[in-house]
Length: 142
Image 1 (cartoon, helix red, strand yellow):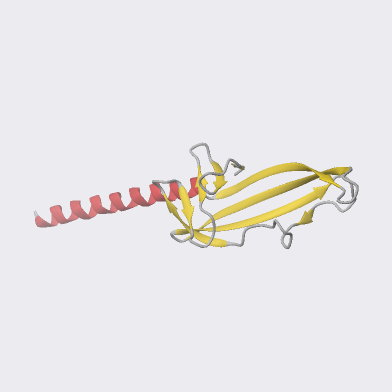
Image 2 (image 1 turned 45 degrees about the horizontal axis):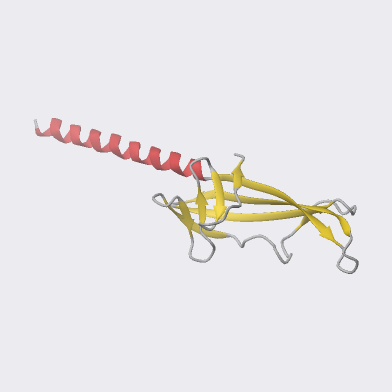
């Protein structure tokens, strides 16, 4: 009789453990992914004030699992429509990407917190914003 009770308890604990890891795993999968935003702005000649053309910036945030935490990386590229240089990496630009960091996910506030970078807020519709009050949203593409 004792053996049946012990076997039952072991079976229940195994099922419970598997269920929790699956829900944590699916939560991690819903956070992990690539978030992008693209925007354009008018560029003026600093001397004359005349319009030179448009600059387009592609800003991408990559979030991947790193054990219990998440690894966050950012890349920015820009292209001017008035020159022939094509897409240029903005790694060393004045408004370059965020440095890579590791963050923990707080489910109650839906934020990735690191302490060394602004919080990343993930909305229910899978849009990401940098900081709690930012109106700039990144769309999740995968």
